[in-house]
Amino acid sequence: MQQGNRSKRVGDTKEKEEIFLLKKQIQKLTAQLNDRDSQLAEIYMSKEWKLIQLFHKLVPPNGWLARMGARLFSTVAEFIQWANLFLLQKRYRAANIRDRRNHARVTGQDNRELQQKYIKGKSKIGYIIPGTAISGGVAVVCEHVNRLLLRGHNVSIIAQNNSDRIPWFPNQSAPVYPLGQIKGDAYDIIVATSWGTAYAANLLNADRKIYFVQSDESRFYKPNGLKSKWANKTYRMDFEFITMAKWLRDWLKSEFGHDAIYVPNGINEQIIFQDTALAPKGEKIRILLEGPIDIPFKGMKEAFLAVEGLDCEVWCVSTLGRPKPEWKCDKFFEKVPFGKIRHIYSSCDILLKMSRVESFAYPPLEMMACGGTAVVGKVTGIDEYIVDGYNALVVGQGDIEGAHLALKTLIEDERLRNELINNGKKTAEKFRWDASIDILERLFINDSAK
Image (cartoon, rainbow, N blue to C red; front, side, top):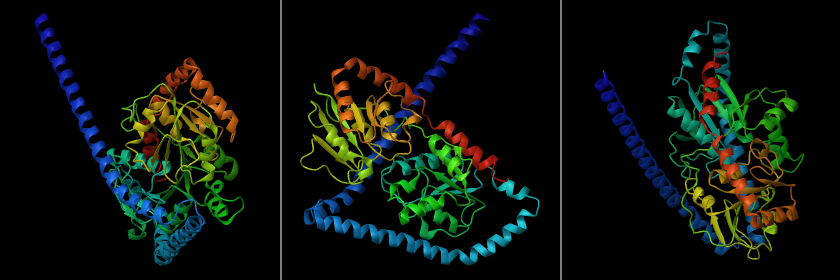
């Protein structure tokens, strides 16, 4: 009997060793795939940036000609977007009338066939995104679709800018299709992810239409302006609603009467984690400023003003725009692939985020996951995970002096800084994707044939 137990223990030990070795091999292969994706993304995006740098030489980015060109480009891009929607509307009008009649006949019959269609993997799910440029909203969509794909769902991304790739997101698995190539009845479930895509979703035929609200996008524009009204109108449309922030869930209920399903964001621990620094840390604390410089409500100008006069290094990463020559900036990164951003976070000690409009505010949470802490201006979304004095310091919105003093405190008080860092790591560990994808599965399968 004892010999049998000993043999069993030996067998169990060998099995555990084999599992451990397999896990190590998987981690190594995953790291290699991530590096390959990042290299491909850098090659792809470097072509774009070479053109942009050439354009900047011909037209200085802060000159009047560049500002006029930016306005013209924005106007033309919007015209193209709305022209595409008009063409889609014309193309699908007849098909919509026919399919509504068919749907009316189906709803009067036994719906067992419809229920059968929504078994995992059989229903076709399409997430519409406004474009494929680097953004937190698109990154969240990539997490949704890639993880649903791994669970056996038939899911893809539809790009409103008619692109067919998202080169900057690591291990992007779900296919990306241009909106112009999509037939009116190609999907069973359509998910809009922004106000512009809500209009596109309305033109496509689907048994179910869901609106994944990631912000109150009417705030992005001039109050009571045309775009603000267009965005606001989408929240009154006939969709099922889901969102990733509690404040948005409450807002959709109080303002529009929608019972939105809460699908919290997560941290992808295979992409965002403490990793090798790009440069060794010296004696000075290194502060990171993150955000698109050319979008005023992201507060980058205020962030640069807040670090003036501090005895620190300043790094900056931006997806749009460059720092002004007079701003304090020791190292600048632009349009960084998502698979590389952790190296920048891991190189810095404190993130300063002064945005005036956010829905979730991902960067402070990502900074926590990479071993840093943050000073954050009070904004919607930070209540999802930030506790002032526990894992970050919070200052008033637009409070440049307050941000300066908070940074100075963290530079001088190593004990407080380390306490915030340790608590930030604990916070980041609570945000994982599996539970959120469970919610999505229940939404797409169990509730599909109501």
